[in-house]
Image (tube, rainbow, N blue to C red; front, side, top):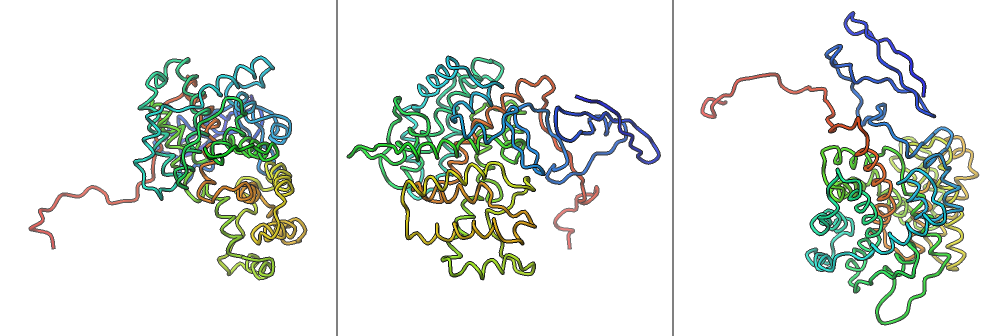
Length: 430
């Protein structure tokens, strides 16, 4: 890591600020002493030019289309590993050896059941409750059932809480889905892997045997890996901010889920599928392509381009392959929505306008198609995102708690309201 100095002049006063460099990526100017030295703050709406923390977990280079977890490219992790291996990597910093992997898998698998009293907690929601509303409530309630893993100062309790959330999130998500569609809950099975177990809990019914298709399970596992962490995004920052107050880990993850629910964050794949529904058929695509190219038309193609990635989304390459594997395995034909998606994909990869603007299909485009093909309604898309992102939130929360420089988050503001004025009795007000 490199260090140098930056000079800043405020009202004629010159100060020096430390410039810090990471192992890779842009340098940052440390402004921690700015207010003390000058009496001024920085103004950065959305914190898009501000590093809120130091982290060793995930690195993104949007210009080059790079996403690394602990230094490992996302495509290698998704292609050669499984989700629990990625979980271990995010939590502990290194890939596990065989013994470590077997032990980690065993511990996660043995934590998948939830407290039986929690199953009755679901009946407090309306039958048509959105699954994300259920997730927010149930995950937040975990702290009421697992008192032995809420002491954030105890490394053992932090580890137990981390394993519990990674293990129980698929069970809670599957229960939210089953409650949403009016089917009985299906308990987890210890002889199934993580993704297969989740699909079994979602699509099995007590009255008949359900065998998980390994191609679909592998696709589900890849979706989990590709969504596991994405640096300091809105929901991750929410988890860190909540955690900075000393809140228990279950409450912090519930806060992250609430943030993820926003359509500008976790709802992008649902928006992409809604767009496909709006287009309706392949015959209508030229009209919508023309509209997308028209700057005066408010219509936008959802699932193309990315706020962070100015090049091709590295996750989309793996997701594209996975999507086509799922469609081929299921032999889906005569589905207008998927026909529209495949034709849009072809156009986006060959049309000069899309290539010039770098409006490549992103992960949300492909994951929406895949999840629909797997049988999930759009209301479950963000739930699955939350399930996968839980490990990233936990890793980021754990890193923050163990950071000796961590302090409670307290953003400042640029106040533009009224200055001091005296109270006027209501009888004297005009």
